[in-house]
Image (cartoon, rainbow, N blue to C red; front, side, top):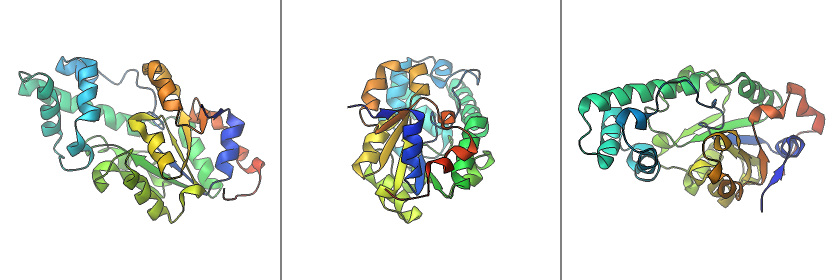
Length: 249
């Protein structure tokens, strides 16, 4: 059964929580339009085959056991086509690193405003992201980085979504029980299912999945307690405070 939709429903839920935990890519970042070619295009491989390698066959990069960007791309690319040249791999590495840096630095103003609003209301905010070292190389330059109370990258903690451990690490660092927190994400990597498994209330952001892979929308929404299209829909700074005193669910 799909979660409740609508800005007011999500605002009311967030108001009842002490902390909000966010996914990063495709949740807080902009929809990618003109940030250069995608990695699979540079490598000349099939999109689905690349995503399969990237998302399903690369625990070493996501859990921090493999950190060299060239080694990561070489291993993934040559699992699809062993004949891809070192020159092509080097181009792909540079392009991918630049594109991910741009993603975390060029955060939409609406996202920045909502995160600042949460902080102004006394909420703790945290981040849980599946990412390898090269994907978050630009994080320290992100305008939203200083707002977070806790930042959990899978490559730093040796665990990835949807494993319960990565959520539990975050909750332990926040010093809060799951019932006091919400998790907000686009649903990739089965993150909403993982969040629900440890007792977190889940809210899904649908804009990216509607833009790129609408066929996956229903499966992801199945694990969303609440649904909203874009984070920016949550409104102006004062809207959270209009819903009542801070409390715990």
